[in-house]
Amino acid sequence: MTLPRYGRLTACLLALVLVVLAWSGIAPKDRPTWWLEVAPVFLGIAVLFAIRRRFRVTPLLQTCIALHMIVLAVGGHYTYAKMPLGDWFRETFQLGRNHHDRLGHFAQGFVPALIAREVVISLDIITKRGWIAFFAFLRGDDGQCRL
Image 1 (cartoon, rainbow, N blue to C red):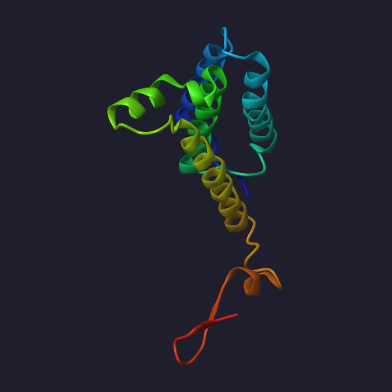
Image 2 (image 1 turned 30 degrees about the vertical axis):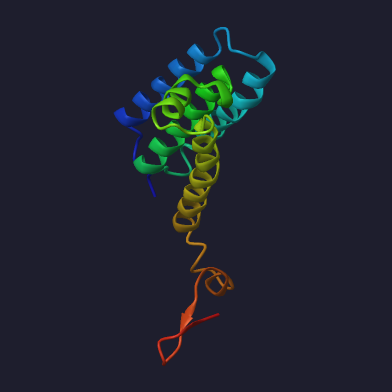
């Protein structure tokens, strides 16, 4: 089986992430915090590069991963509590705090869930013995869902 080649979208997303990553590393508010925030970006790029020939990442997932990496890089540059866009939202909508960290936490749950979904679908894990009961409810004759 030959996997399709990655195209222009992949190159553009990688370039965008690398530009934002480079920008975020220039005089961040706190260098140790920056390293902690962007370490997953470096790791993610390395993993995606390593699996690129064996596992096809869909354009939707590529975009979500890139956006997550950008959120991490921007959060690392400013720290989440001092993000200027978050401050603007706080002042404009009269919020009690800068909620940029909520965006980061949402991405930290949503994007890995999408990755898990892609892996489960691509590797046909659901069709393998024992996994159907784990992932799905079986519908009875009365229409009720049960394990």
